[in-house]
Image 1 (cartoon, rainbow, N blue to C red):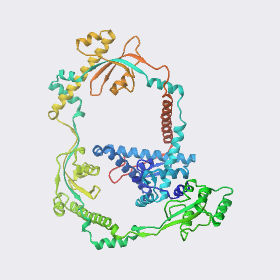
Image 2: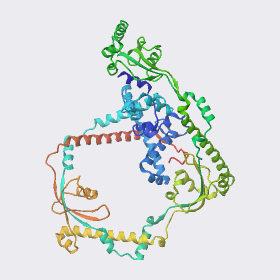
Image 3: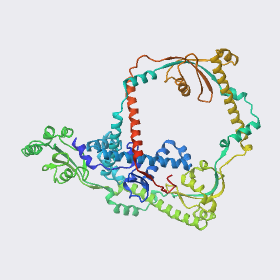
Image 4: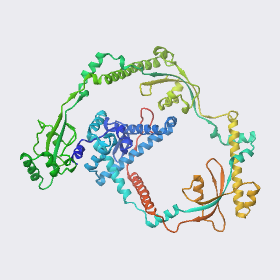
Length: 632
């Protein structure tokens, strides 16, 4: 399919918005690392290959956005913990180091995805498709919108495919022995029968009595249960961008913007052509010249394309290609197509990277400028957003000046900008008001400098034309709460602990009664019931903890096979294994089990490769500060 191949020459990098979760390298490093200037700081050096601080910052932000979309509000609370943030950064850096090592290994092995593979990968991206088919116009629009070149997309996808080739080579070479898979399959389908006695924790709790002294002793033995995190009390002001309506934008400003940005509203010339292609081989020149002679003799271009073109896909349609714009296809093909003067003209023989061609011009769409009436509303909205941003910037600068000039109060800044000074009670990092639940604010609020100097903070950018200035009024370090404050909680926890201890003692006694052959009397005396579990499999609808314990128990011999397990919800149960039934022969699923085991082994092999590469690599970690906090 030549038209598909031609597009390979126009592939490059696109943004994480386009590729998202599809391409691992984009999800990790982001587009920013491709389109920004090289960073001066270095986060790590891997065998003399640098990982820039800017690339790490881009990757960290992308990972943070991904986690935010998955975890929502819970993630905002987790971000309040500097240790958690540092762990994310370190994890991202480790992944980038691993990718660097993998890429170096790929270069050493000489692995390289073909142009055809790259082309197919790009055409398969749903972001470039309309109604399930590759849309060249959409492809070009998305690249242009993100200020990216086709070559960047091509190179990045090729890099990802190269990595996938290495992964597939390792995973594909792993295997599992038939006997091993058969044994695993038989164990998977094993059935077990057991007797279960549940010891409800609630019954032990209702009978457990705890004195104040016992609660106090439990409190003193478990101070970590009663820890109050460090807290601050704040004053703060929030600055938001003023809303500017598109209806308020002056008509003359709209016209001036339209006149100054004509190129943005111009649809370039487009052409639709047909072609006949001959693959490059020993007699390609003679074959294409013979076709040209038949054309000159009066034969139809479409009929010759159908019968003679080596591009069978377009040949079925008379050689017709989709609409194209200058600069989007193979350079030689592109130049020849746009050199044709009139509809119906046929080019001389053109040699591209893919073969020899004859090109016929079918139709031309002249370059057109969208009228102002079609784009007026979008221009007005853009100018309104720009004006709101300009207003916000001026007010933000004024807020920064006033907060600095009057460092011991926010009142002057609030009065001048008609803002409201808001306050909090003592709050921990996870209790900040929603508008302040930002790692930059929380980091500032708990910084020793801000509370020791008792001054206003610098302006804190919150994004989306929002900013804040905070002032720490008071600070309480982390400490254990007084017993009187948590007495009720201590009593309850001590009661649960005593109940769990009593339940465990009862479980031990039941196990001993089973060994001594007195279980029936023991159960009858305590009015406890048995539950018979017959032919239980690993897929049975049972408590996961119960299943794990049941299938880990040894086969009973002279002594009963017993196990105490804590179930979901806290109840304790005692299991007595009665019978084990393992199939004599593997099932029909043994082949699938073997494939799965091979894949698991392949993943282990790949991780082993990464570990080996790390062990022999020269990796230097460097301390780098981001805009928000340190990487480590």
